[in-house]
Length: 402
Image (tube, rainbow, N blue to C red; front, side):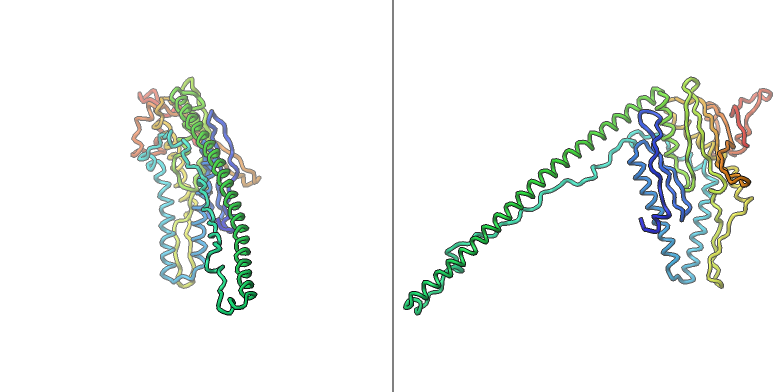
């Protein structure tokens, strides 16, 4: 991560939310430069950290491209292309708001238990022995290097001959002693390298064994949790529902935070869901490049346009959440769902923030399954409460929008 992004992007420490035998961990990730926020949840804290790192790297890349784009001397045509690209991105973000519900209907959000199993490969490479250092050839006394050159004069002068023979013998003896020292040093180094390799290999095998043992334990834990879920164990049902909603893909700016409880007596799931407030809704509508002033002009949505987008968004999120929980209920654990939608607002008079429940609804699975969610008007759907007088059964037993 670049030094600039280090100050702009940050993540809190993983927070443990123990619900059952397999705890849920969550991590808040923010990037102030991009005004991005994401809450990452998983049963494995290592996975949470990896997902957070990946998200921060992605945001950092986006931010760096923006910085590079801002620093680069661009032609007018390039700036026009940038404005067009940013406008397209803004329109796509706005379009996402209208398709929050529809986009979920074509995706399978049923929990894949196998994907919860930790199958990451052991992160450390297996040590390999280093190549032994070769010992140089042993000096041989009969080598030509150690043969004195005796000429006719040397034969006539025995002292000259003896001196040459002595010098050759001393050269050999010096080379031989040097070779012995080098040989001993190399053998010691090779032996040390061999010992260190054996220790490293032994330690690596021990760590690998621990890694594989922990993974097997985690796999057993997941299988046990799966069986508990199928047997409608309360904690396992809660974990299952939390994981389903955590795996649901929303826009990056979406808070995606919630708390779930379960009443096994009447098979009711209670969802307290943190809804996005108006400040999080994308506001950028268009970007224009003004040639005369060589500047970019950002055109924002009006307050009324934002509110017009926000109102149906809240209903879509509610229907989508209920749909995802019902549609993935393979164990038959849910007969009804209570959904409470919360937003965090700031009192402009006091400056204090508070959480307010702006929407509360209870639905019955049998009646909800009859809805054609691809054609339904989310807001109108909430008004289909029916009454005993017209013979209609109520779709929602209780609903209010504050």
